[in-house]
Length: 73
Image (cartoon, rainbow, N blue to C red):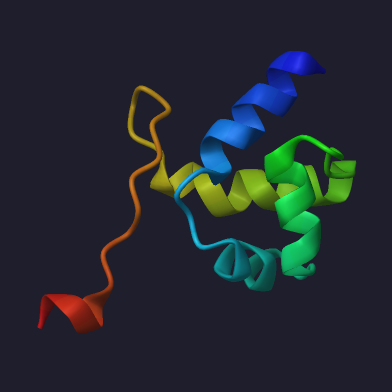
């Protein structure tokens, strides 16, 4: 459990928690608790987090934010 908590905290550092919450259908306060290590996501939310973050990870498992097309223009 400690490794899962650490990895989850690492993923959630520097990301927009409101955006993550909106994308997976939960409250920002819930995601904040996951990031701080107060709680862990249920199996359902863990799966949704995997789906959210997987396309944004490089081959080393490092989070790479997807560019905002509006900012590139």
